[in-house]
Amino acid sequence: MTPGILFCFVIGYFILLLVIAWLTSRKSTDNDTFFIANRNSKWYLVAFGMIGTSISGVTFISVPGTVNQDYFSYFQFVLGNAVGYVIIATVLMPLYYRLKLTSIYTYLEHRFGFWSYKTGAFFFLISRIIGSAFRLFLVAIVLQHFIFENWGVPFWVTVAVSLLLIWTYTFRGGLKTIIWTDTIQTVFLVASVILSIIFIGKAMHLSIGGLIDTVKNSSYSKIFIFDHFLSDRRFFLKHFLGGAAVAVAMTGLDQDLMQKNLSCRNLYEAKKNMFSFMGIFVLVNILFLSVGALLYIFANAKHIPFPGRSDFLFPDIAFNYLGPVAAITFVLGLTAATFATTDSALTALTTSFCVDFLNMDKRQATEGNAKKLIRLRKNIHILFSVVFLLVVVGFKYLVSEAVVTAIFTVASYTYGPLLGMFMFGIIAKRQVHDKWVPVVCLLSPFVCWLLASHSKAWLGGYVFGFELLIVNGLITFIGMMIISKKKNLELQLQKAS
Image (tube, rainbow, N blue to C red; front, top):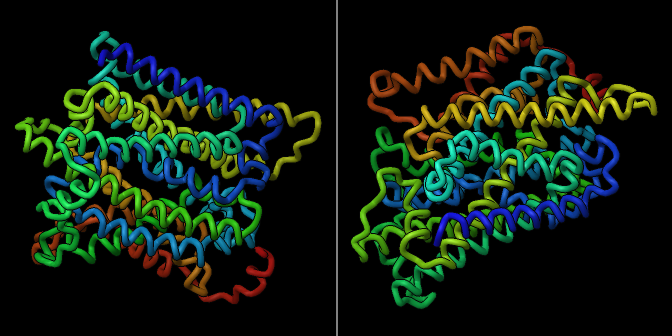
């Protein structure tokens, strides 16, 4: 399969997204449509489309690549995610709908004040830029290695073209368009992983039942790890509790994914969306882990050398050993995963900056300045596209480990303050000194990093895993407790509602 043919399929896929964008954005004339899709989204479309946003190219490539070293232990993390999604549906979403939020960080303004609100929004911007740039980076290096490098195209051009394509179909319709494009992209993503399993089975002369037995009986299928609590980051409680915290922070406290939930007609439909999403999410991750096991089993059987970077295992086998149809299927699935997470992130970042820092929802959009606000929002959309380009190109020189590990490690530091702020706001019946909140939120990741860096020496050989996010959140919580005072919140809560 030549790079030119693969590229043609990518362009064809992009044209399909453009058609969908045109159909969904013809009546998109205001910022309310861009930000929250007029609060009229179908819950089942949101639930299915969120899979594409949550899975991303990282899960598509990096999770299968980790199976050789970590087995199915990642599923412990996924089970924790499921618990986190229940917390989101039963605790956070009722709060967001009661306050009728466009940006979820305005809750912090209701609860604490101006500086807390801006601090929360700032940490979201940093978290989502880094996290989404990681995801785009992983896919860009794969496309670069297997397609564009053959033509002598520089890496930064590959990234720039990808962002330009994404910007083209999102700049007008925003969330209203993304609800539909992400649904289509999830179809491609899920179909791609299922077809990949079938192609591997065909190459190994195994039926579906044979594939299941092969995975189940392999050494890779080990899920639960209860040994070496101190030194093994994969220990069950570390993965499970970390997974729950990551789900709450990276979904429930993330404007990107909550923006879709807030576009549902009411809280009941939003809850149905979240629980449906949870079930599909667990099943899809089982498929990806199974793909990882089958890839390593296939490579061992065919004496295929493992690539130096585990993230390259899936594309290497798909492009070179499973035939042209498998290569096309892989490229379309990877493209779908990339576009789904990046288009959503660009829209959420634009929404957060416009609402949280430019106060577009509060400014009087009279007939004279409505067009000006729309132009400003489009310029912000372009600005974040450029920021993505710079960050992704920078990662090329900084990232060497499996990207899925890098993403959750960074998230432990950037989402920790958000977790601590919201946890304090919901649980503690105290009011903070608002102006000191930014100081607490900036210090807590540093303290957390210091603790993680010296945990072996200070904590008897303990090694942090995904539960580091919980530690960061607790440090923030304690810091806010220190700068707080008792206060009757009844009047404040009445005002907020």
